[in-house]
Image 1 (tube, helix red, strand yellow):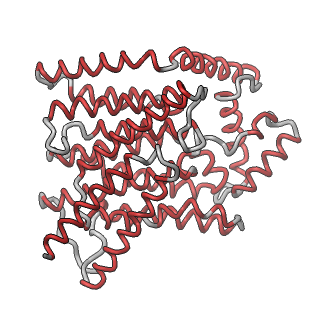
Image 2 (image 1 turned 30 degrees about the vertical axis):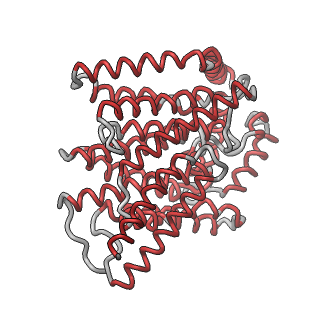
Image 3 (image 1 turned 90 degrees about the horizontal axis):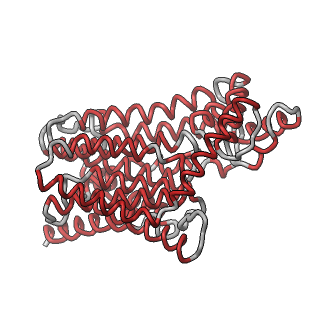
Length: 425
């Protein structure tokens, strides 16, 4: 009976991760509910480990990655405390604090990685359908789902499609490998369509990065049937092109290029997107040396912006924008070198964990490593033109995905005895 109860428990957690990922962009606040739900499940498993006097953290980098996420949150929160920041600025660190609980939920819940790929595929599909509905039926110029921002919606749809594509050689639900391979590429296409529809050009560099990576791996080593499937997927993607506002996309890219050239030549903000960001970045870098170690704080950055606008040193157009639209520069201006170092720390550790997994001969670890590296690359690319992890949907999905993949790496390494057994606390 206990065994049957355990099987039911594992089945529920697997269905839950798939379901929450699939609705993460198509149901209001689903991404927040998902993170909180798995944190609660992790708390249950944490108490169970305490009662059993079992070890909690693994004695290696992949086991300590969740603690590095916690350290990032604590360092940034202490800097905010130093600046006397309002309580509302501390909420953003909560997902990083419950990262260890997500790892425990995935590990002790025995979540099957293939439900993650399926959840990401369905999430990209639903996001694409929602974007097309808002564009075609509602006439929205830039669909935003339920996230309130087309940039956040488009970027996360692309991320889900990219993670699904990373799991293309790890078919779920006993699907035939060629079938799942085709679906995984199609899932990436759904994410691309959603991203192009939202006109979120800051995330588009991820598209060639992921495509080149997987095509180099797949096409040249594929069988004749495999190459035929890849060609068929390309044909389906071309069929979706009429539904994409490509003329608008090209127009936005051209406008951004013209605005960038004008800013470098005259220093004026004429286009309001790329050139406005350049003005913001220039401002952020100019105020950083004033307080290099702990920065100005969020409200201090806004105050300095208004002062420089009043002095005629910064174009007044940028005061209509929220933040500096570049995560490293925002951190540098707001929290100084210490805050930036803590941000670099989580990405460096993540790259090491998933890079090592990707370089293993074990096929499962290679897939998990690629999915983790894609998630890290997406966050870094998105953060170049937006305050990525400072936005709730982005950080919730990032932490949930990365901690889930971390736990799956730990589980697979344990299974193949590539890791030492956990030691007691």
